[in-house]
Image 1 (tube, rainbow, N blue to C red):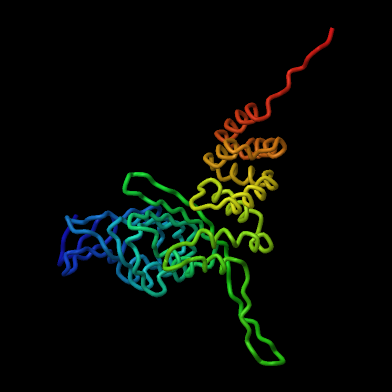
Image 2 (cartoon, rainbow, N blue to C red):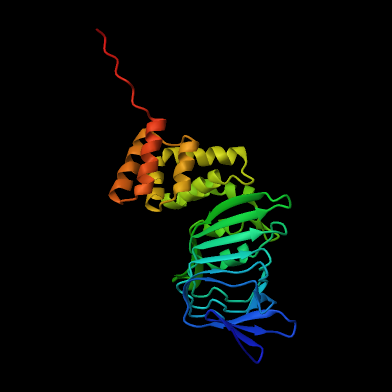
Length: 303
C-alpha cells in the first residue's frame, strides 16, 4: 500500500483519510467482478464513499463493511454492471441520485441495531424487481432471516389530448410494496397484505418468489398470510419446481420436500428440467426426494 498526501491505494481502490481520522472511498480503477471494501485502512475505519466514487464502474457486486455509514451523491451513477449490494444498518446516509443508471437486483442487509435501514430509499430509487435478504443479529447470537421481493413498477406520463393535460399512469404493484414501511422499518404485515393485489397484476415467476421466500423464511409471518402463500405455491408447483431447478437453488428445493409441497407431476417435471439443463446436483436431490415422497407401490401377486 502506498501513501501520498493522506491518500491510500489498495487493490485498485483509492481512499482518503479525513480530518476526523476516518477513511472515505474516493474512487476505483477499472475493477470488475465482486469487490469487498475493508472495514479499516491503515488502522482507520472506512465510514464513507465520496460522490461519484463508483460512477461508470464495472463491478458486479459490492460488499460494504459494518463501519460504512454514508455515501455521497451519484456514488453509483451509471454503474450498469452492479447487480448486488451488501451492507449493514449503519449505512443510512445516501446522497441524491446514488443509484441513477443502476439496475440493482439483489440486496443483503445485516441488522445489529434494530430494524431500521436505508432499504426504502434504495427500493424507491430502483424501479426494477428487487430481491432483498435481511439478517437480524440478536444479542444472544441468534440470527433471524427474512427474504422479500419488491416487484417492478414504473410511471408513465400520458397526455390527455382533448384536455391538454398530462396524466401519470402507474404500472405494476411494486409501488404499493415500496410503501409498506414505517419509520424506515419494513412492516411485514402490510407487505403480506398486498399479495392479493399482486395476484391480479404480477407475473407467475415473481409471485412464486414472493410466496416461496416468505414461507422459507417466515419472519413475522401471520397465519392467514402463510396459508395464502402456501395455497398459491401448491397450485403452481409445476412452475416453481422448474424455476428453482434452473437457478440451482438447492435450499429451496430441499424446503419444498421438507414442507411436502411437491405433487408427483410437479416433481416429474422438475426432474425432467434438471436432466435437460444438466443440473446434476439438483437432479440427484430430486430423484432422492421422489423416492422418499412418492415410493413405488410393491406389486402383490395372488397365487
